[in-house]
Length: 308
Image 1 (cartoon, one colour):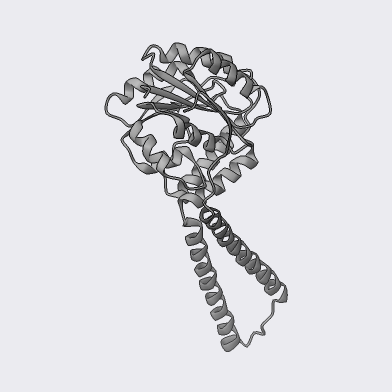
Image 2 (tube, helix red, strand yellow; image 1 turned 90 degrees about the horizontal axis):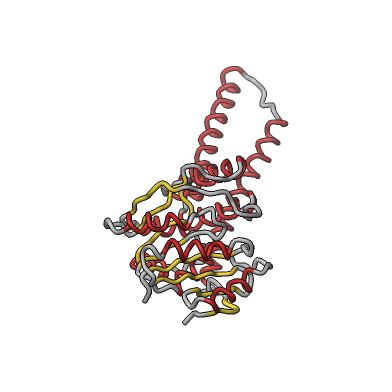
């Protein structure tokens, strides 16, 4: 049993892993020498796994896991948490935008009685478009999922063994690490941290991936889209009833003829689109329910090193 575990999902990180390892060892050693580093390689197609094997051979505290295919960042975090054994667990990204030097501050704050301490990035080193889409994502997510997830908080945080144990008991297919931890409701604090520029390359979270993550997490956490569609259906019905009464009164009191074939056709197409959209929302929920009933493993491990 280690005192501290560091869990890092790895994707296309061959140019940052050596520096990441060195800085982690230097930083965590100021707290304890009893630590482990779990690197989960998500089949990025570069030399990341070879470097992980090299580090693991040199230092037994480095544990490596390689997936059989690309499963995604949050599944990598899940695999790392499944295989860590620390009393305290730090989760961070591999691109060195999360600074290992902040770990002692996270640990110090956690010792004041918190099970979760978040690293809050006040000055995020992302491009304008990434900041904007991320902000939109969290606004929509918080509204539809009925959560208050801070856009300035990423995966970087420290969590207690109790949080890890309960997180590992949650095996739903749709994974959103931060949302699950927030949902559990453990005593939480945050500290402001420096957010560095990416060492190399660019973010793999494209707008398309953010949209997919938004849809998956909203479906996983809330049925609000279904309730909104019901409310919208009632609204359309009320508007239609009022308009129908208006037309009837015009005919009875003014003898106006019923006209408006163009508006009728437009209305039919509009309502048809609404109905198809609502059926699509229901279909997505049914599809995700079907995925859950299959009970497939969350990830498949191809290789591992130094993992018991």
